[in-house]
Amino acid sequence: MLRRSLLIVLAAALAAPAAAQAKVPQLIFPVVGKAIYSDDYGAPRGQGRHDGIDIMAPKRSLVVAAEAGRVTFWTSSSRAGCMLYLHGKSGTTYLYIHLNNDRTLKNDNDGGCVQGVAFARGLKNGARVQAGEVIGYVGDSGDADGTASHLHFEVHPGGGGGSVNPYRHLRSARKLLFAPAPGSDVFRLTMRGTVVSAAPDSATLAVDRLVRYPGGHSLTKVGRKVELAVSPETAVFNPLGALIAGARIAALATGKPATVWTETQPTTLQAQLGAPLSLTAEKISLSQ
Ligand SMILES: [Zn+2]
Image (tube, rainbow, N blue to C red; front, top):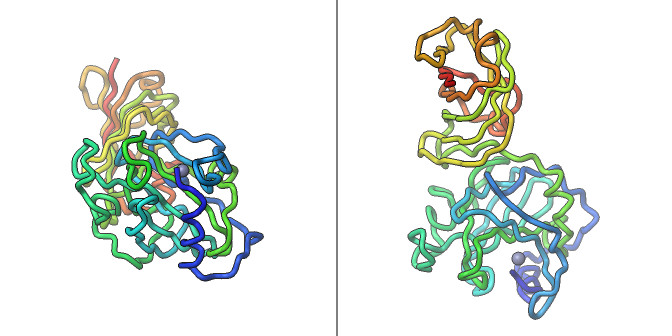
């Protein structure tokens, strides 16, 4: 929703030379879970052209760092509302605009641009963050107030220079399966879906729903296949609730709905991406 005139202020604040030719690295997609966007960069918006892309997502969807870098909060723009800059290690700066400002799930505008509302719980202004770390929450602050919640995302190669179209960078971005709870370096998941294939030491689940702990953050309509590691210690229950040998999962599981509990494991980017065998099943419960 943001208009061009704000950028003049932002560019002045950053006071860095333009370097639009600087290379933008492969990004982590900045929103976790269901998100819809189109190439609306440059579209006419009120007083100017649209300098970013609006990523539509449910209110309070987790917003993550597109690459490793340092965050700076910006809370004094009536247009941008609650926003932050991510100064990426690559030299590219990303603008995250219209973060959540509501205390409740209603549009109360009562939460303020603070940690736990707009910015990730415990995240400090100026903090260094890892790629894929939660930095904020999707909302409708600023001149997006009352519209469908979305993240206005801008990409500025070289830092303070002009923006480039984020579209192809978003298209080629790696999407996270989940994001860990802010401040936690371990996680576990509960996933529901259908077993697509299984071998004695792995099972591929077409994931429909997912809950991440600690925090109990849930995602629906995940729509991704994840290849899980199955170990001799994995407890596998058949549709009658009987414990079976893990090695027999291959013969039993294909095509069956299942709930999978992962081991508690350290947070890694590979696990967050749902990379093959990066998650280990502790327990698998099959149903008919
Ligand atoms: Zn926008």
